[in-house]
Length: 341
Image (cartoon, rainbow, N blue to C red; front, top):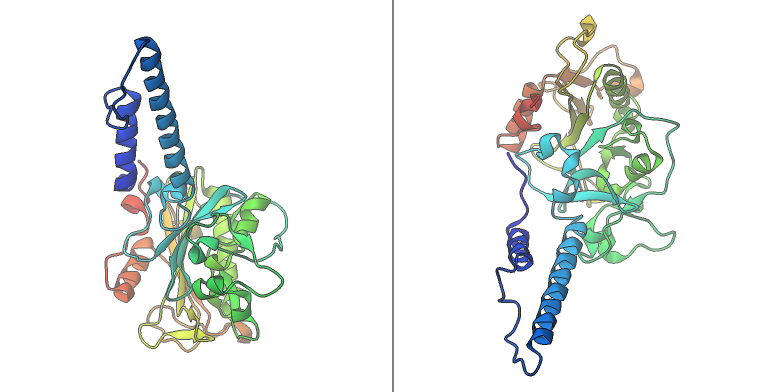
């Protein structure tokens, strides 16, 4: 499946191409030439060149500014430039210091993401502690697309209405759970970019500091050791089937978290315990110790602080089956199930 420009941008490109080829004069009003016809023709050509330059600039600005509402600028975050199918929400190309780092599908009603997708790189150095940031274009569509650190003082009300803020998590029983973890990135900028509220969901500490953290470390070690090419990861959430849970009646809490990776080129000499984990593998983790056990069973031998926050590893097909059941539609995470092209 090919990723295409929106229709309006395709039209603009077509018109621009015609103009550059000299096959269209509809943009230039008729000109009455008196005296030196050569000067008149030269003037018309200059006007057409200037107009073409303006069109190019307008197109470039529209592409660069499409941080919210369009995955096109950050399609490199997806395997074969193909975003997951079966979800509805607001696309965000997560931009930090004028560079796109990953992609997020955001839910405005929930004030939290459905999933984040990113290209894995082997981490380097210690976990950073950058300031938490917000997405300005959710509050002001014409704002700069770079994520912005929260101010020390009061937060703009439009920002508060459009997304979660620091105050939502204060004195709650939930931590800020990264969908795209800093652990899975190499550069300081890429790791810092993950600290944005459009990339986190309310996650119980028993999950965030326990089995889910272990999963993130396991995926990191597995991909670093055996993935020979690019590795793509998508991590998302599963909402409650009924009776949504909220913090401060503002931010929706997921019942489960899920993650899947795609590494089409890998070392075939896998140890026995990793057989069947390439090119794709997936997992679902509990975020509520009181949830039923048909999706993820509870281990009776888990430590007390981690009891009920188990993670179940599974095939990509099994994950998509559970997502289909909860979202009531066919879900596809990776293009052609991550088969090497």
